[in-house]
Length: 343
Length: 234
Ligand SMILES: Nc1ncnc2c1ncn2[C@@H]1O[C@H](COP(=O)(O)OP(=O)(O)OP(=O)(O)O)[C@@H](O)[C@H]1O
Ligand SMILES: [Mg+2]
Image (tube, rainbow over all chains, first blue to last red; front, side, top):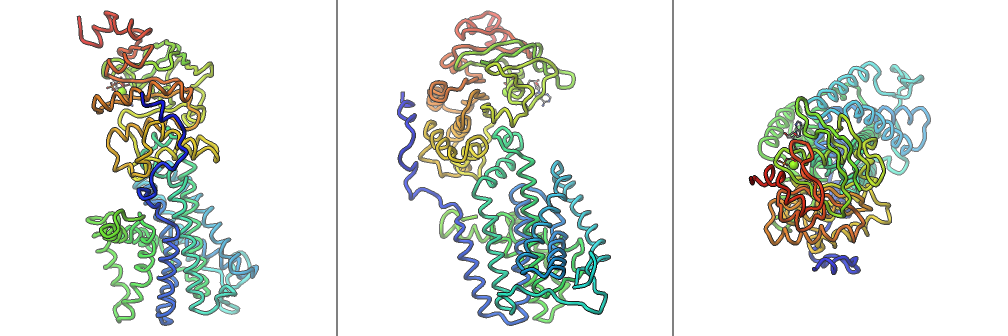
């Protein structure tokens, strides 16, 4: 009987190093982002820099949606509302207490995480169309609230509205007051956020999410606390949205209530699937589609509304032929050269 | 030791388990019966996914029914599924590690995962994705998952279904070695009577949710009632 032999615990590595598939390394994220950001910082003019700063920030919120959709198959249509929440809190704390920018930013992330969790809780037992509808209604509710309240602009009281006189801009972080440093600042935070997500995917939460995707019965039989891991995904997604909102607020120093309609949440989800919800760089692609593509069209003198049409076609294309999005197609292409595309 | 007392399950109008009383104490016991006899349902009751309408179950003297499925896993209950449930986009090792995450202490996780991988002989494909494993390797992953942490009761639902004779024989040797190596009791469901005969000291036969026979496997398989109901003999 050969089982006796195999009972001895392995003292040597289980497989020769060469056969070990590299686990989608975190360093690859950092490296790719560093090259990409450096290129932009070197070559972009002021107009593009502003658009790409927003794109960088938004890629974080897309990464959040991608966690929910790519990891758990959950469709959340209130992500842009959570971006707004993060922006609101960052502005409110920033104007009210004038702490270092990072403190306001972190507060925005934390409050959006809590709200994301709160939005998620009633939805924990919902899925598919029902979850989508509930979250879309939440996005609609936020649209109504924010168009009534507006974003804080240095005024008094809870709402912090200044009504014309005494309006002020939120100061950028002390170490990045100019356009290029602030872009790099956003790029660094976006990279950290993408690495945070990636770290989740390749460790314990990622394994638990994978089991939940496979089926909740199997997940439970494997000891996974399904509700806790779903709740954590909602909180993480909300946190990333909140940070994105804070970075957007820092970019121009203020935010516009009208820019946070429910449609923006829908658009964000659609582009997350077009960019690719299953690969880390899908979020970066989606961020570029959301902010750089409209900028490109403006640059070429084409009406920005054309983007909606383009996005519609892109979404249709993604749904019909490329369910893993542009990032998935890139990964397939890379896989041909390197064997085994990384996620 | 599993003690089952007047257990009944109801799905609408049917009773897939009907007033079942049985005690299983062999290191490896068999659970057999015709299609639809209620074998998988009994496993689901033991692992907590189906609630009985009446009855009691004790594992080593501890009452199981008050525990949630998660609590039962933490208490050492492991199960495999009739259709294998290997996660395609996790490696073989990560499929096992996913369970270790939840049932082993931080310091133990890597050790218990490697030990289980090694026991079932998957060391050489540890880093292969689930999607690239063949059926036998998948069945071994499922078996390996059951060995993570401190298993006390391992329930295997047709672990050899679809395997070749040679693979079945290897699986059989592995299952036989589990009680001594891991200190767990094993219950195996299978339609392959020869497999049951080879590894189970004791066997419970179900028919329409009732106990048809229980005892030493040889005795049970020779029972005329069993041969008539299950083996289709007169
Ligand atoms: N979730 C359910 N809802 C309703 N009826 C069910 C359910 N699960 C099983 N049944 C029924 O309960 C009975 C017992 O099914 P069970 O799956 O336990 O049989 P089994 O002995 O495992 O059969 P097989 O050998 O085919 O796997 C069958 O009549 C089946 O149709
Ligand atoms: Mg069955």
